[in-house]
Image 1 (cartoon, rainbow, N blue to C red):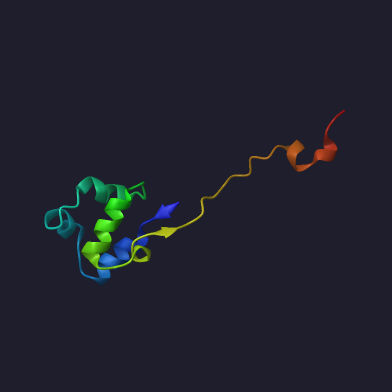
Image 2: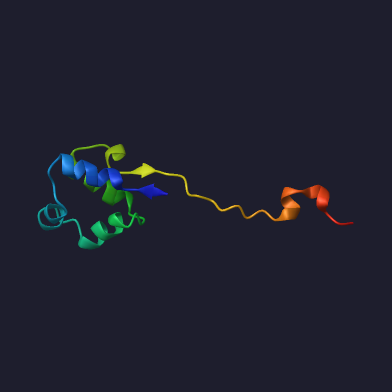
Length: 84
């Protein structure tokens, strides 16, 4: 999963508010909302944020592996228990 925690840290470090992005940089409030919820955004949006903040992609997002629930059945885990 892609998370945007680094975006908010970078904005704070550069003293740029969400209001500034919306009002002066023409970033839509909808895109800000999607970023807050760690939803999918386009590479165009990432590119635009990198230009506005003068930073790299790593300063905006981070990949965190999803937690995958163990969905194996008992038979898959213990093939020797398989009944004839």
